[in-house]
Length: 466
Ligand SMILES: Cc1cc2nc3c(=O)[nH]c(=O)nc-3n(C[C@H](O)[C@H](O)[C@H](O)COP(=O)(O)OP(=O)(O)OC[C@H]3O[C@@H](n4cnc5c(N)ncnc54)[C@H](O)[C@@H]3O)c2cc1C
Image (cartoon, rainbow, N blue to C red; front, side):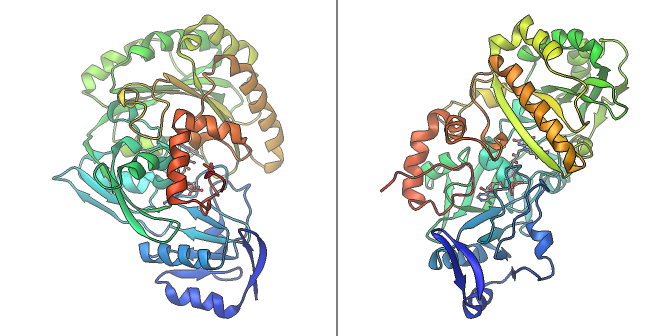
């Protein structure tokens, strides 16, 4: 007998029942002790250490349907793993059945139509490699190891969002296995309400087995980091607030404040220009004219080179996230700069802890708020406070730093947050406010596609109680 967690509590499955599932699959069924089991349950956030009773390593949509059907028959708790990168660890369950999509890495590019059909196990690095071979790209995250699936379903901030919209804005269709095991397609023409909901509503409505994206031509970009000592922070932030709010869509430029590996507190301007190189040099000249940086890595490069530039500073580890969209007026004030520089405590306890100001607006901001379930279109900037430390014992000091920093910066927040940046201890109220004005419509969609809350390990949209 194998002990499992059901939606109602603990139960046991007979060996025969387990073999019955194995027979239905093209992919592998893994249990504790099987080769590959520990690797499959490990996530990017190594602080998460859960042991599913069953892991279905899916080989295709039929396996997803079989896993969903089986979990339903046996009332099992289910988690869904795409790239395994979400800090909450919702992708892996304790004792239940984990639907592992990480082997589904198909990436078929139709260069003539500017379209991509992508599997849900791809990382952005893998997807970008496939599209860049054809001189094409779509908006992905700012590092290469994040999963395509979770990032896109929550919205998808990235280097190209100001030019081409969020990752979810570039979706043209999806295929999804619903809680009752049906495989449905959603696009602007087919099941349009579901298509609205999966663009920002996360994994609440089913398991996406195929993503179809629109692609855009993208050749050499101008990108990199200008790293200065934090003592030059005021000058940099003043120049940034003059330039960033009115910058052309081709420029996405963020501010990173952290500790360099030698212990020096630093501020970096991180930028991506995706237009003509000459014009880019002209637009970023005020940022380049801020005196000699410790490091200037800004140069013409491939998009793939930019996407992997920050991988080394985002290694798997114990992490904590706090985020909030910034209020435009508060962001422009001297008080914002004073608070950031005078009331946030630098150096951070670890070089992995940092503040990142994301530059939003442009094309992503022009999508009408009701067009997708991602609703925070008017926010000009997002402030992310990240704590990370090795060894795990260092985590406490870093989390303390992140909490104090979040508190200091709270007066500048609009009160809204991005659902993909919420951490595991987000309250129901915080989750609700991350879905914002879309929440009521999302609950109606949940009632229709998942009335028993079968897909509950996520930033959950609870169905209406019956
Ligand atoms: C270092 C780091 C950098 C990041 N950078 C960015 C960034 O630049 N931009 C940005 O927008 N976000 C970023 N994120 C956040 C990221 O968007 C989320 O963590 C996202 O959930 C990761 O997707 P995943 O597939 O890897 O996640 P997973 O952990 O595999 O899944 C997270 C959740 O998504 C759902 N899910 C996953 N796959 C599917 C599927 N196929 N069908 C249905 N539901 C599914 C499930 O509910 C699952 O619990 C970053 C995170 C980290 C840790």
